[in-house]
Image (cartoon, rainbow, N blue to C red; front, side, top):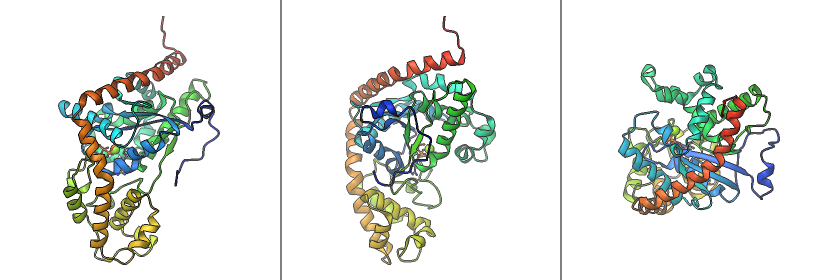
Length: 356
Ligand code: ATP
Ligand code: MG
């Protein structure tokens, strides 16, 4: 796998059991059913889910409990949960071989999260930039769940003792918190190595896709402007229109990587092109150096339509068959619970919860 960036960690005693099966570890990752699934989610996370599935045992989760940290219309939430599951499958995740499920169907996530609320320190939570960004100026009025979100995320991962988590760059800080929680739990309760020190898998040419309207802001499901993102369900016309309108600057295309870095809107489009084409960004810069943006944008449109069209079409097909999606989710939840339940039982014993 090219460009895999993982953080250096001490030898992980949890890996041996997977190595014995010819695998590199166990993966957990999730996506919120908050609507508007976009190119950033695809390139930063979902596409990588499929690419990792032959090397890892995988659990891929639609994190509906995270979604309700901000208000969600209940009917829309159910439909969006199926949509994200459909996206996992459309991107090539094998729902028979791996566990694809929604978080609320596995109550062990919430049970472990409470314990982690009691392990994590307020000082740690106060440093989380996602909370600051999402709460904005309305801090007094956001849900307690939004604040506790990273402790639930740590539970999502550690309830399976997952060793690796593929995510976009924006989730790096939450993964560091997950490691801190694991270390503190292991120390506080005198159970060295009980929870693994999870490694992030952040790789590819587009680990942080930026808004098409503002190259300094992350592309996000919750951005009010639909022109800020390419949705996975956009048709060819919508993709073409959004790329045509994407913000650029008045100069020709950058000639070098250092030139591109100073021009965030151009840099973002180059990164998207590189990721979709499976090329190095430097090679894309070389190919389009000094050309007009219009020429590049037209090539990017063709590429995006070719690469995303089949994924979007397969998602639409699966969304017309909710029975199938529900069966996958149900079977996935059973597989997930079979792993989570004994780990939670160990945690309860460790913490001293009586189970007469
Ligand atoms: P929200 O705005 O509701 O938080 P989101 O777009 O950030 O939505 P999430 O469900 O929070 O989506 O994240 C799902 C996955 O997509 C995570 O692994 C996250 O790191 C990744 N991701 C989200 N946005 C981007 C982006 N712009 N570029 C690359 N990866 C991204
Ligand atoms: Mg997010």
